[in-house]
Length: 173
Image (cartoon, one colour):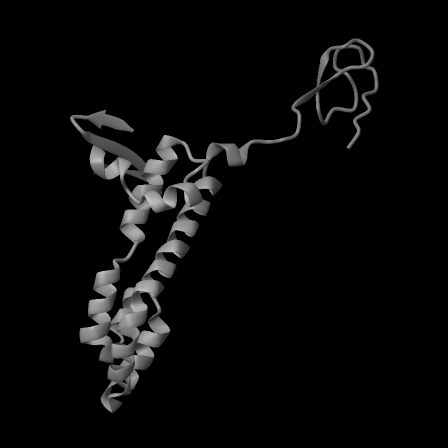
């Protein structure tokens, strides 16, 4: 994370490449404060910046969802917007009947809640993926060496005999 002239540049690993996301300082510090306690409380600043960059990319806007449901609800476009492709295809198949148009108008009032639910699922998924790829997740909790009871020298944890004195090492599993 590099800060210059009120902007913050964040390098985000993306497969075997890196992306650079630019935040303005005001946008970075005030970005989604309702998510901080839930998803980013135990994240480092780099992980938090990575989370916000990915969440900004994956999140959906409530107003867009409502407008899609109002004006294109007869074709189920609002379902495609929330990646509910099965329902979107169903609406397209029955669009000639006019029933999806009525349902689209009704669903326009339900869209803000659905978009918030979609965004919460995305935030949870992104946070889980960030925690899963952190270096701490790969740490081996088992000890790497034990001391020999006879000479006190360091021995490999999986060794049966001490390389210094040849004494038998008993490990308790």
